[in-house]
Amino acid sequence: MSNQAAPLTVIDLNTDAPCCPPLAQRRVPAGTAAVLAPAFKALGDPVRLQLMSMIASAEGGEACVCDLTPAFDLTGPTISHHLKTLREAGLVEAERRGTWVYYRARPVILRQLAALLAVEPSG
Amino acid sequence: MSNQAAPLTVIDLNTDAPCCPPLAQRRVPAGTAAVLAPAFKALGDPVRLQLMSMIASAEGGEACVCDLTPAFDLTGPTISHHLKTLREAGLVEAERRGTWVYYRARPVILRQLAALLAVEPSG
DNA sequence: TCTCTGTTTAGACGAACGTCAAGACAGGCG
DNA sequence: CGCCTGTCTTGACGTTCGTCTAAACAGAGA
Image 1: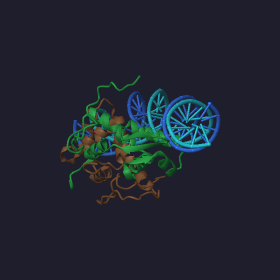
Image 2 (image 1 turned 60 degrees about the horizontal axis):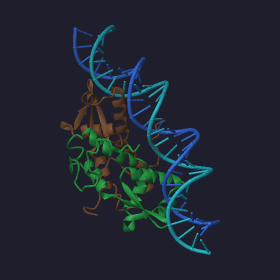
Image 3 (image 1 turned 180 degrees about the vertical axis):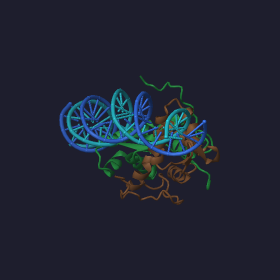
Image 4 (image 1 turned 45 degrees about the horizontal axis):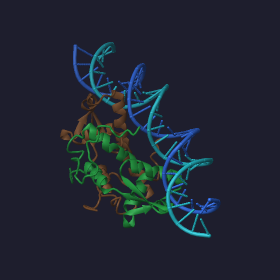
């Protein structure tokens, strides 16, 4: 069963809207927390945080799995699993071009997470 | 044994320095990822994300556990456990004043996380 | 078509997580 | 002091996570 009919999609992750006021400004509602927490969770592993950074900072905006995998002391399947986690969290998207698969960051959700964490300059 | 002698403290979470360039600008090194990933992980649970927000947005900059607990359908010990997780991640700090315990956000690390997630205004 | 390389899926394992009930600790008040 | 209230710790339970090996899938090239 594809469990995506849940009525939880309070936030449209595809718009460029800032989505939410900073976490420190207004209390985050349960629905918003349920939607955004998985994204933070996906970033909550050192390997995935590095993968995310390698992808987001790659030249041309995309990184090949063949460049990502050898950067870690982990097997290919394990890296693939972590990439799937990032994909399911909406943080990256994948595209196969011929032999290789390329991953690209999705800046919109990154901006939303950053906005949620924003704090007054010197509060 | 208090396992905090680990030689991993690449980042001083107590300074006000921006600490790291955005994740999308330069590849996050393994040491930095190891230090910051636990903070993201701590925010990766809906309950903790809401707790963090309730604390950070509370009037006076602090929130009493007695106000936090009744906001969820969870037992006191469970909320306490989540607060401990936030504390160990360096996101909040606690202080007991008489009968009640008050939690306060630590804006420095929040700023660091937000800075790491920062993305150019428009791709 | 067959074979080779690159990537993902499936299944299994131990470790860590989220939750609870029960108990321990801290502080205020008779 | 003894009791009560508020908070944290302990120990347990089932679930999820991170990793691996083995196998399946997708494309390129002979």
